Length: 328
Image 1 (spheres, rainbow, N blue to C red):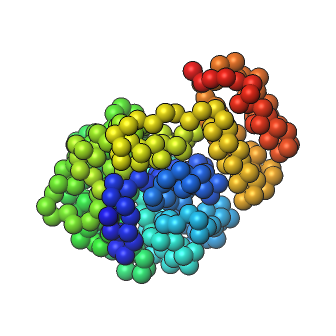
Image 2 (image 1 turned 135 degrees about the vertical axis):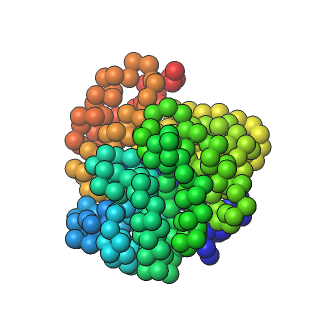
């Protein structure tokens, strides 16, 4: 088992990465159903939270069926991060996660997200302040370093552990890479195998199949793997990976009926949580991902992406398995 403070996860834990405008409660619900061991909210601006920004406050919504779940916050000011931690704690998550990894320019350039990797003392100061301000376990998600010449994650991981975090997730790219090129897991493995490290180390980056997940577990010995983009339109990756790790047998891809069933469930949950207008609008990007690769699907996709009537969308979804025989 994997321990994050008092929180216990199974061996070879599978985590759903926090992704802005993706990992909302409706998407999290299907990933949880399909085997995600730990999930996180979309990342929340500490400044937005303490100013009671509507969008930031809404991201604090979590549900019992999602547990264990962490609330992820980001920022570059000690006081703001401390106050935001206290507000997040009131939402009763299982842990607080600090985002020191977001590479988006407007965030990184002001010293938040992965931008803070250029100021390790401040990174440590914020971490210590967050740890002191909550009784919950605190974890961190970060990257290998700022750029190719500054891959200092081994040093940073030790500093963050000393600051009191209970687990670390490392994305195998630098900030300069954004999401380009291949994730380099060698330094993630070095952190995991550093004898000074006593906390769980989770790896993230380019795990897009059960086979790739097993390879990363076997090669680098990480305590868990965080899956992000590969779960979009493919939440089965969690259950399939677990089955492969247990049996060594690569599971078949879900058929179109199963895909449609999960897309339908996801859609209904989106309506329930966000209301008709927003629930429909925010599902459109997911519909594109769920049904990617179906031959002659353009006309049906257009209807899914333009309809504003929930009943019509449900009718379109219900027609898909019989109308389309296979996925390329």
